[in-house]
Image (spheres, rainbow, N blue to C red):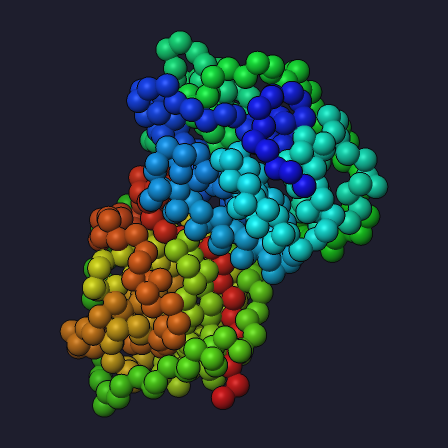
Length: 499
């Protein structure tokens, strides 16, 4: 198969999975600056794309597609640091989707982005990573402009994954419309200005959906990067044709309750995480971590797909049964993966609570809102305010400390009152004897990926943590708008360890 950088802009190339394969070339610095700002806006909106329950697959596929396109264009402008950050997020989306065989769409998006950049060798290397032959054939057909002008019939999608099929049948046209609207807005004189904090007041700008906003912003950036194509695609229908049923029905899912609008909680000063000192027993150093071979050989459970309605009812999550004596929690983040090994004998109450939270998906899509270099990395406030509010009063009792707060250990945060541990946890980035004296109780340690933990974005330090009441009240919406650089938890999986 010959992979050429498209030179014409007929409908076939516009059908390339919603990607505008424009000949990138910037006449002067001003359009490049405009494009860079709009690419950053597209990236911010893409990182806000999320889903709950069965919508999580679609959200990860859309996020991966968008960030692959943004990264390719940032690299073309020489913004390699920004491009690499988005490429890393794309890889994490792929990893989370691979558990269910749904990573084909994101891999295809990476191939389309490489083709748009004119890197034929990289395009072919990426295409062969699509393990589903039918999906790989579709990706190649789009590259060749041969995917057709209309919607595919049911037979041609029989062998692709359900998520890939939904992206083709439901997402493609909508995103093309948003992208075209952005492209046309970007050709306006004067061009629109990108804003990372407010909503651009532009005709046709999609409302609250971050995915649609990201495609619009991407279209504006592309308009600033390229001249007007000689042939624009014909107007596209605003209503999608009916989607035929999947050939293999997916398992039924319980409908989730729509998000509820909560009254604003009364803001109180953020508690200082300094509990009363509890009785300290003799401290022993943590056991030696397992060898890398042991960690790799052990199978890891697939990540949990969180059910927000269930999470908003803590009684459905908390389990009276004790946690396994030893278990591993794999945390996939926007910077990479780290593993926490929990030993229940160190702190039974903490191990039980962390097990219930981790296996329920509570930590999914949370922000690392406190990252202080050489001190701690902290997270644990749920991004959906209704869930955060439900868990806020559910503290659990203090317990004696049996391990020291040394580098890599994990403990629950606490307020300056007894029995105040709840859902927030932190990883020690150094040896902190003063935390031993203050009664913080490690319940596990990072056995793999401590370098990943240390690399999480630390530019804001303690500042976001000082706004914990507002984070509780407004969730990820506040953090993403105010501190968009914060890294996130992508997924969490729990695996018992037999020693």
